[in-house]
Length: 183
Image (tube, rainbow, N blue to C red; front, side, top):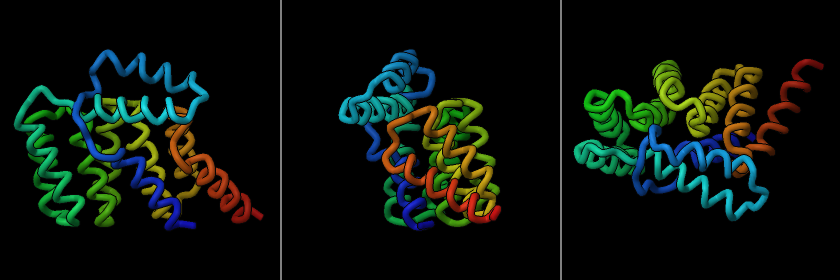
């Protein structure tokens, strides 16, 4: 069960391959409104992809280059290298939420949960609707056996994006785990 939750969260956190945008793009409000209104899963997937695209966009070419390098390093499991690239992004553009989110993801992957939590907080401060960061924080709490907090963050992620693959099932499984723990 835990492995299924982890794979789902990583899929959400990574959002597929980036094709580049930022959390201040005015298009995001329209996209989130459409995302929460649609009942069509194909349309929802397309809107989700557009949201990720916006989150990745940077007007700073160096940030774009570092994102590409960090992504490649992360996918190759060169986590120290990935942290270095994402840290450089944060130093160059501290208001760029996805730099914080990517580093939080790497920290999660290497088991540095407090560092990951700190970066998730920065991400959510810049983009409170960041369903990747919200579900990632849920995964951190799940790893720390804080199921109630894990559930809260996963529910917040689902509220931000009601079409996240597998998250409804994961929430139900987590609710059952909590219920079983209480009994």
